[in-house]
Image: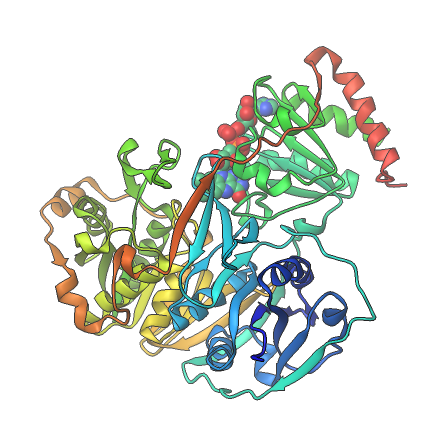
Length: 323
Length: 267
Ligand SMILES: Cc1cc2nc3c(=O)[nH]c(=O)nc-3n(C[C@H](O)[C@H](O)[C@H](O)COP(=O)(O)OP(=O)(O)OC[C@H]3O[C@@H](n4cnc5c(N)ncnc54)[C@H](O)[C@@H]3O)c2cc1C
């Protein structure tokens, strides 16, 4: 009997750990692999071998890894060369990877190297009757979902962190761990690579988020929201319009082309509630929206709405919290 | 030094309508503009030109009307403009697009640096930059937010990967995709605009780039992905308690209750 083909998760190993999106993809991948009759495998490239049992406990049938000091730095060229050399020989039907910055920079190279299709930022995935991957992503400015398919193999998709849920670990699961040879270790065009600083802003994992949209008139006024966020021990965040207008940095953006967030409490100040914004925060436990326009769509998703001016509400909230 | 900037003409996204039957946006429903991220790419090139005297070529794949976008790029400081246009390119996904762009780049000739925007606002995939680099088999750096230094033989950029900021130095050739943080695009002067109107846009067709092409077919036929179906998702909504302006105080009490209930109050 021929060996089963595989659904491969291309894992990011950064900041000395496996990026948490990998465990979310394993949970989703398990269901897809079962439906398409595939094995579920993970490929990791990392500077020093670690304990891979968590990956197996979360659903991996096989863990492939390449261990080499060259993987201590995010050099897409070295990564893609080695991944392509592995994929050339493997029987892979589907490749999923997290849509982190590195994933969004690397996956396209892999897809182009294989001349295969890649769908960015899928919000859902499924398998059709013929066993093909259905790659689902919102289409443009309206609230419509495109179901995309590929006629080449492997079928590839990137998925944002926190789009899917992490599953529970089953420590009794068995899996295979396979060491691969690092074939290419040199990138003659890269002269130097250095880490400058860690990015401190991490809105993805915050418990409380205080987000501002175009109702906030200028960059200076975000200080008001920041004060409230600090008082609550929460994180500041924003809609894309204010990011595009240059009022606040891109790292703060919640939404389809920003971060997915799942806080316990989400404040939306002066955010209209466009589908692309909701795509990023609809899973929040409790949503409080403040907007001057009673017909703003955000009030359909919020648990609590206040029809009022954010410039009045925020100082009053700050006042209340201080007492 | 020769810099090639990739430019895309996009619909004005706040106005454009969607054709649910075709599963595509109806490009006729709104005006067009240069993809905003590409203006940052062009500005990056112009700043390098001011510093080093580099020559800038702009390249766009699109219908004839994309000529306007290229002329705007000339007004903003580009020296040469190339429009890759052919009926056969229609319906291209990112693979077919980047393979075609890569072939056009090689047809234009020797280059040191290719600059593209982080993504296009209509496609929103951020794939064409890295894929073009792959078809050219050169290095790329995505999410470039700063040009740290540059000389005849090397370029150092700042990028954000692995939840950290990195600096990377490369020898040429290199492709970079830039974020909005890298600069603020300047507006072209009136004089430059007038002059650009007469600028020559060189046309490239499939026949011109065919020899350099690394895929067998272009456009829809050369695209491994297609839209199989369009679905209107179920409306997401929650039961909302709305407080009016006069009821603000009760809203604040509710918020306080939630904070206590969820154990989110700082001691
Ligand atoms: C491909 C694509 C991807 C996108 N990705 C994202 C994304 O990731 N994230 C995102 O957010 N958007 C995204 N968008 C943009 C999205 O469609 C909306 O344009 C955007 O979310 C609107 O931002 P906003 O709510 O801040 O602004 P607006 O829609 O202008 O809303 C401002 C709101 O503030 C209210 N307001 C004004 N003044 C006050 C005041 N003083 N007090 C209280 N309320 C006030 C107004 O009533 C209004 O409802 C994307 C769009 C596209 C096409």
